[in-house]
Length: 154
Length: 154
DNA sequence: TTGACAAATACGTATCAATCCTATTTAATA
DNA sequence: TATTAAATAGGATTGATACGTATTTGTCAA
Ligand SMILES: [Mn+2]
Ligand SMILES: [Mn+2]
Ligand SMILES: [Zn+2]
Ligand SMILES: [Zn+2]
Image (cartoon, rainbow over all chains, first blue to last red; front, side):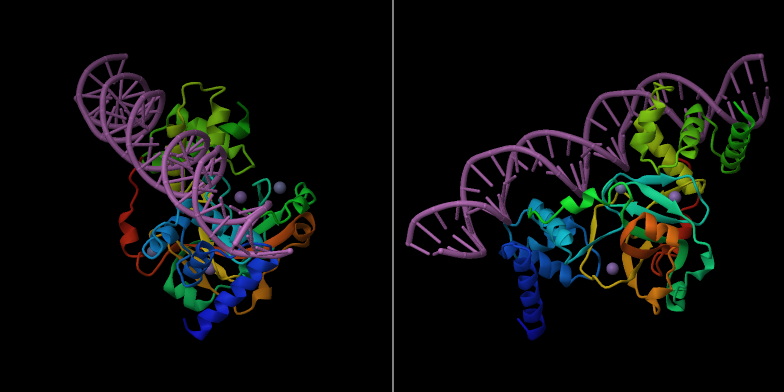
């Protein structure tokens, strides 16, 4: 284990303890696997990888662990939240606010759609067919009751 | 049927014919249901609604129909694509490019993160915990072979 | 108007991610 | 080292989606 990894593990330990989470070999393994990945993996993908060196680890644990990490804010869940596919009849360029509590998607329009600047390196490297600002958080309805989703573990 | 709906149906018919799709009662019903919805519904939600007035329509048809519509570009699929949940260890503010062909997610950083302007109405109405520019399209690897995904029906 | 035929549908089955259940194990603390 | 709540493994369940196929139907040309 080199210095960089030790620091990583150390920081991980501090963050877990701060939230009252036990430090388990499974959590360490999941965290390291995700931290060292650049591919925004799914739970299944991480599990498939870990099983080589940690044969007894279960998919359920990997999944729960990742969700726990996301809840305490040491990792993020990215778009494609595993919910059923959602459709939109509105093909005008517009943006979305996604409520993490009630799962509603709210439209909003950008007064100046061209203000969104995309680095030239990106426009060259990819063929871009869609661009959208994706905001997430809590809608007016849900924002107050969201406070009660405190910090239970798992 | 009022004038507005006739125009809607007319435009729908033209778009389908232009792509060689048959005009079926199911497709009309699905299109109307989505068009009149403001909630970015799932296939299941649309099916549940339609079944009242169209008892024989199957969920499979609703689902296929929506995907067909998305492919010919008369509706959109929005974030939460039904894929397995994806995770990101990188909690810095950054953006994503999502390849529609290989499903890879590529990071990119905004040289000027504060350039993203969010209308004041939105910041007041919602508690925003995340903001990200979500681009989609084809990565360098997939962009050429993407041409072959022409316009088969269903 | 009708007949032929490819396209589309209904519905049962299969798949796969996510979640639940619960007996067992284990990290944390004194 | 003993206690205890937290966490895990792994089997079962759920729910969305995709597939296979017999049947129906929209389209178009005769
Ligand atoms: Mn929308
Ligand atoms: Mn990322
Ligand atoms: Zn809400
Ligand atoms: Zn790709």
